[in-house]
Length: 273
Image 1 (spheres, rainbow, N blue to C red):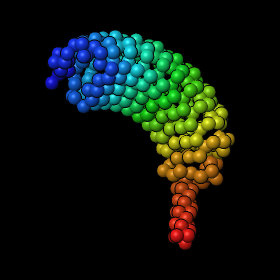
Image 2: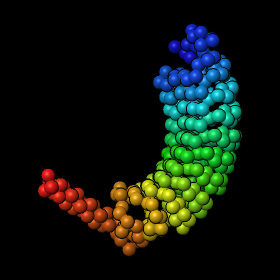
Image 3: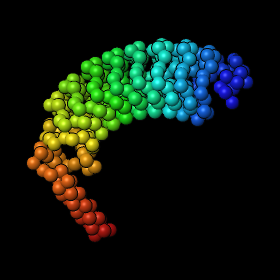
Image 4: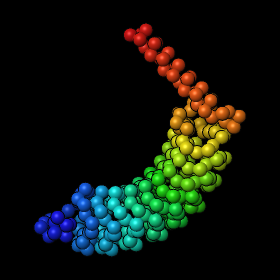
């Protein structure tokens, strides 16, 4: 049943006072303009449908705090999205987005934003206005560069940039001092900027699939515990200049040591038991 017919069958008074609406997995291909009449909505989920466009009237949902649009076929976002100034959570992953409108910067209350698995090659400078963001997912896009304004996102604790085309990180990344988790898997990084040592709260770093040869800068990060590189969670002693190593030999050595430690731990446990 198309959404327009469904809405007609529900009492209008009931609809207008509805706080949440979950229409996930309904194969909806189009939203009726009347969606904008649901003035009390605070959460709207349209996950995994067949939406190609959104009506301008969606901008009338001024009370929305959570909007889920992931798993559709959206290639563009309407400008009206910038009117949803109370949004705290916005999920638009797994679509076909090729750009993000500048007025996304109006969504200043956002704390979580997911744009993963799209076709984005650039981000608008206005993304730096989202200063309340704590979680930003940009993985599996086509980004080659990050906007300078990303330095303003100082409340970020989680940043996922995996699966892009980045060959360098801007020095301004040093401003993201609250980051605890940074994912850079599957890019083209050949080196890490010296400024990364200012990410003093970083505990987890993912570097798989990058042609890096020197990890020694990571020794400057006081809280770093986990470093994933080329399929291994490297211990501290391997955060060094790897250019003199044959990488496969290093990883083989590392895995042998890890296996030996695991066996010794198991033997010790059996003895105690």
